[in-house]
Image 1 (cartoon, rainbow, N blue to C red):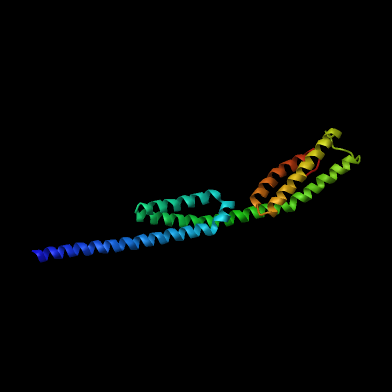
Image 2 (cartoon, rainbow, N blue to C red; image 1 turned 90 degrees about the vertical axis):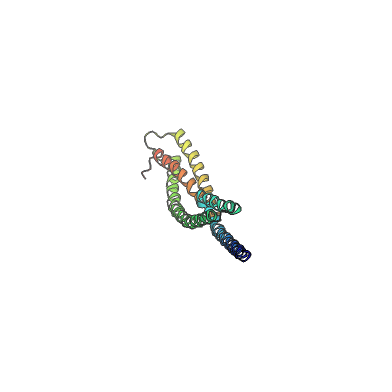
Length: 194
């Protein structure tokens, strides 16, 4: 009987050691998955912060969930959250690249068209200031207003260009979009057909 009990105890002890060893391996594997996901997030973090900040927040939330689950010993939950974070990092990288391309194309379009349109507006203001015949509804007071609006437009364009030069393409596109409306109003006011 003692031999049988010893055999059962040895079996239980062996099983406990096996489970402990598996648990240690599972913990290490989970930690490795979390570290890999964190590395993936870190690799795209700066671009994501600029182009897709909402997705960066979601990825950081997923990695934090993985770390929290690991701390509680929930290896399956931690591994699942780490995989989710790694997937979010991959999606985030693609979304940031797409957004960067979209904004760059938009900025290039503005950068090509706005200066030309602004030159036409400036030339028309100068012509009216020298006595050229003004369109119906335009008078000296409105010309002064047009000059003031043009000065604001010119300063806004300088600000947008500075933002683009500094790498803040999203901000530059936003400013240029707002300026496009001001430019359209000026063109209408001055009788310029676009």
